[in-house]
Image (tube, rainbow, N blue to C red; front, side):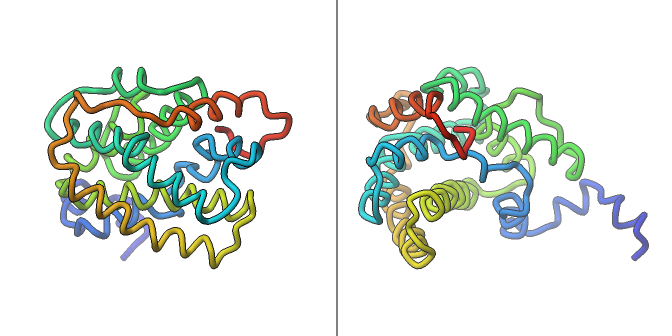
Length: 223
């Protein structure tokens, strides 16, 4: 196939790509949205000795899934699939300036790639979870599949932060990723009835450390 033909991938071809192939592309480390640059407040939690080992990290992941960011993102993406326009609510739900920067920056990077390479437009300033929901809906990805990939990708990025910044070590990092599969599975089993009234969290220390991250004397990550 000539280079010109490869460059001219139209929407008809894209929609014929299997769901799992699309998800592998979107949530691969080679999809350049820059998620590696964001620690989601973990850098401050590590520096302040709240997360020191595998047990601390797994507890953090459990809380984030069941009571924090990922629980809320589940609702945001689910409701986007149902046709709600929740971008303002998602942005308002950011607990601090850096969290706001994170979800806007990731969203803008994601939508830019979709516009330039996938011929699908999303407005600038759209929060990352909303971008995921709109793209998944457009490309006919089942909600159950996309939310599982979203959770696993999010958690894998956090584990990678800990591998490098604590440091945990690759073996322990892989153990955490493997054990997080069950955490995700258990949450998804009981999450079917979550609705807009369930948005919120009880991750107070995490929120405070995300705010404190802005004033760390030395920072590796943007958030």
